Length: 386
Image 1 (cartoon, rainbow, N blue to C red):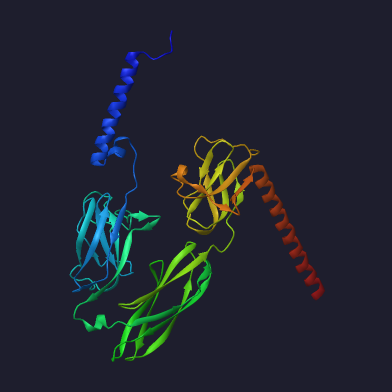
Image 2 (cartoon, rainbow, N blue to C red; image 1 turned 180 degrees about the horizontal axis):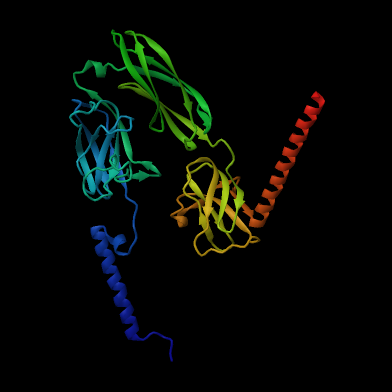
């Protein structure tokens, strides 16, 4: 039988290709081509929130774009929102007015506008009442999509006469497990004695707040001790803010130790490791052919007793050569994860269950010998005393 395609076959193939082209074209027009073919895209958003004057009851978002609809939430660095917009459909919205609740704090000072999804699909904001399980923020590079603006109140001298941050003195480099000293010079520009809050923020989060009292025209240095533990390495923004002023400085944070993964225990069901990772990620245990299991997602930092359970139907012998590998990314999206590297090499450890068990036995014997030696020393001490 000839293997060459017949004219009828060619026509059928051409018809199928034309049909696919039509569907793709239609999908592109309505923005649904990925959904037609079962490809889910991550929700995306963008926001522009400019400095402005206000009466304290509302603020204006210059522009916000949401791929899946949602809300704009206004905060002042605390945990509770000051105001939440009405539901916004997908697309771009300009000059969006967000009004505060009747009993809420005035919308003045250094405010942050964050874009939240509508994961419940009910057009009702539910992030706080569900403890953050629903209506989570849109993310970009792992961080909430937000913008910060200074909002002043027209005709209100108490707000517009804010303390001024004249300067910040802080190290330009630090590691992710140290406490650094930050000194800011703050001035009262008015002729009146005033008391105002002074905040220090790292990467947008309020780390400490002090109450400062200054006489009219006076200035003073305000000192903070900033703990960098738990902050991701890389370039971070350090800021000192008063009610209506602030100053910023970049600080380069270096991971405080070498990335590592160390196997401390292993069985035919799971592996236990100690981890030091400069990025949010996870640990995977692999053999030559496949991933046998992964840990839960880990934040940047040091972690002890991290468990990697083997997937169902995985069978491992005690002499099989396995490798624990440190990855950057989400364990639920293995195909997008990247191995963490140090000095150009992946951070990993190769082992067998038998070797790990033997090392544990050796350590136990060493501990027992040490305990016996301590006991002998105590008995000798008692004899000497007698």
